[in-house]
Length: 123
Image 1: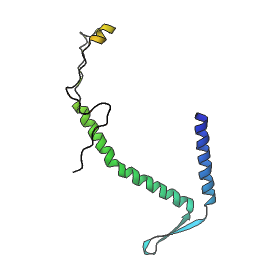
Image 2: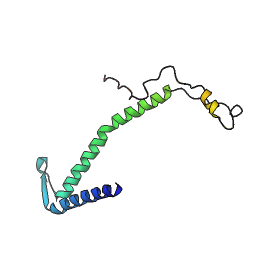
Image 3: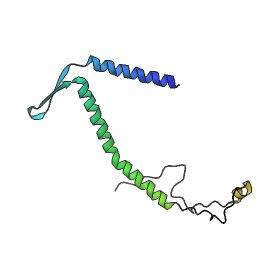
Image 4: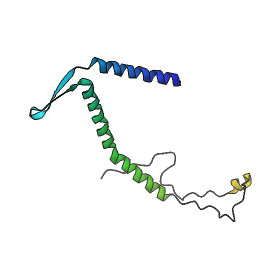
């Protein structure tokens, strides 16, 4: 499977490399107010691709911040687990002590653990 993955990557590289070699001629971009820019077509395509990636990442930043803020808020809602002190802790836990240990869960979880958190409605 790993060899197939590398074969796919090599094929994609050679296709893009052939595209670059076939488009080496100079292209003139005409901007507003008479500005012009001349460059090889490959560089123009690369610049447009990079600009699209930058715009996409910039558009995702507010969503990432919101998800981080919600994750921190959910972490604060979870109770802190207080373990036994070192004097009370057994040196090696047995199956009986693990099975009889009480499970401390909050009375109500903020959302079911197997489902994503609900989205807040837009204001």
